[in-house]
Image (cartoon, rainbow, N blue to C red; front, side, top):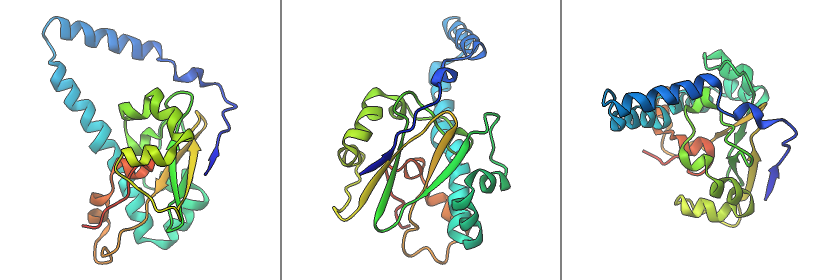
Length: 205
């Protein structure tokens, strides 16, 4: 196992901003007064975590699977290639795309906080921000993957990559067999958020 562990930056920017704190206070007040249903808020957050946000990343993956020239640009300069299709955030961290192969499986974590490529993956899932995942992904990546239901053959090399405030990673999963006839939209439908973090593979349709 190898992992990139260069956390030379200051994670202070991940402390909630004054705006975020005001939003949280307003949300609590609205819930307290019965003007907002907490379940409805949870449903909205879940949609952005698992559907709306990750759909952007899925389109990047589908384009790379369908267009060898785009894939080459993506692996060479992910920030620019992702910007080509309009997915760029105000933070503009440098992006690196990690290609899974029949020999190498990549797993992304942020060991000190929850740095995450939100323009392509949306909101980070709760488990990604948990202390257990942040520590165990580095110490026991295969064990973590097993808990997500992904058991890898010993022939695979598992590489763990540590995100930072300035550098974010996106996993390019292996394209499943039997998908040569699918267009980009259909391919994107196969790609899950978890496969782009590295805790899952993309299953054939």
